Image (cartoon, rainbow, N blue to C red; front, side, top):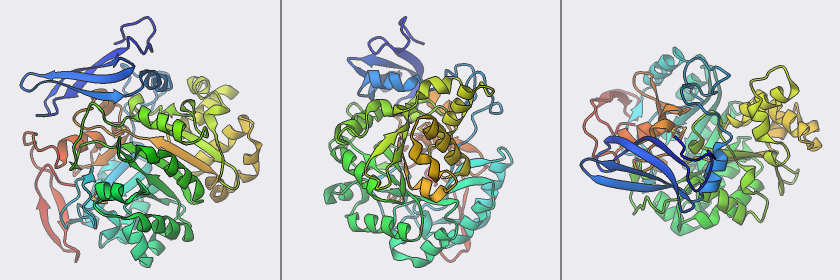
Length: 486
Ligand code: SF4
Ligand code: SF4
C-alpha cells in the first residue's frame, strides 16, 4: 500500500509485506519503506524483537525500476492484468542440484555445498518428469550443485536433460573441471547449440578469491573462459559483489566481459547470507541492486548509465534489473537498447497484439523476461527487430546468423537473491526462478535457500527431504534425511 499521491515518491513510499525474523525464521508482518534516500525493511518478532535491513541504497532508482513491472496485485500471473500465463507464475528458470559435492569449499556458497554424494540419473529423471507433468515447456534448465561437472554420470544427466522440452541448459560451474578435462569440454561442446556455461567469476584480485573461493583461482577462471571459447561455448560470468570487498571491480568485470567474444552475459549477484557465508555480514550496509547499477555507471566511463537498466517484467520488481547491449564488431563499445527505444512505453502496449507498437512491446517483454539465456532463435529474432526499430542498422546483416549475432550482444543482469534479512513474501509469490524438489515441485530458489540450507539452523524441523544419492561408483547408497540436503 502506498501512502502518497505520487505512488513512486522516494520520500514517502512504503509497502506492507510479510518478512522473517532473522533469528528464528518466524514469518512476521514487515514494512518496506523509503527512509533518507534509501529503501529499508523493518519487522518485529514477538520473541526476538525488532530487526531491519537495507533493501536499496538509492530510493529514487529503486522506484524507477519498479515502473517497468506490471501491477499484479490480485493477479497471480506473471503477465499481470490483461494477459494470461495459465493461472500462476510459470517457471522461467529451473535448477536441479545434481550433487552436494564440490571440488571447492568456498567460504561464500549459497548452496552450502558439502559432502560426497551424487543424485542418481533415475532420480534426476523422476524429478524432471514430475515437473514437466505440471509445466509442458521450460526456457532454462540449470544443472547445478555443488559442482555439477564432477558428477560421475554428468554426461548421462546432460543427455537426459536435453531430451526434455527445454530451450537452453545452463551449467552452473566454478570452471575447474573445464580446465582439467578435455572429455568434459567435448561433452559440452557437442551440445553447444543448447548448452551454455554460467561461470562464477568475481574478481581479478587474489585476496578476493581467497575470501570468496578459499583460494586464488584467477588463472584458472580466465583459462576456463578461454577453453570454452576454443570449443565454441558461450559463457555468462557470474560475479558475487560485496561492499568494500570487490565493488570497485565492477567496471573491470564489465570490461573483461566485453573483451571476451564468447561471453554473452554478465550476472551480478550482491552477496547474501543464505547457505554458507563465513564472514561478518551487516544487513544494514549490504550491497544492493541499486549499488551495482550506480557502480556500473561510475566505473564504466559513461558506457552505461542507470537508465539503461530496466526491471524484469516476469518476476517481482525487486528481483532483477537488466539491459541488453549491442556491441560493435571489435566489442569495444556498447549500445544499450533502452537508450534507443522507449522500453517502458512499448512494454505497456504488449497485450495489444494487433498494432505495431503492441508487437514491439510483446518482443520487448519476451526478451526482458529472458534473463538467463540469449541465443534462442526467438530471442535473437526479437532482439534483431528491436534494434532495427531503434535505428541500429548494423544489426541487419547479422539477423539469421545466430552465433555471430549472439557474439555481438551482451546482457547485463543484476540479480539480488534474498536471505532471512531481506526476505519479502511477495517476491516469493511472484518468483520465476525455482528449484525442483524431491516431489517434482518447483520451489522459489530464495525460499529454498533460506529455509532448507545449512544456514537455516534456527529453523524448527520441517520433516524430511529424501534425496536419493549414489556413490562415485554409481551405486545407490542411501536416502538423505535433513533440511540441508541439496
Ligand atoms: S560456491 Fe560453487 S564452487 Fe564454491 S563451494 Fe559452493 S558450489 Fe562449490
Ligand atoms: S529466486 Fe529470489 S530473487 Fe529470483 S525471482 Fe525468485 S524470489 Fe526473486
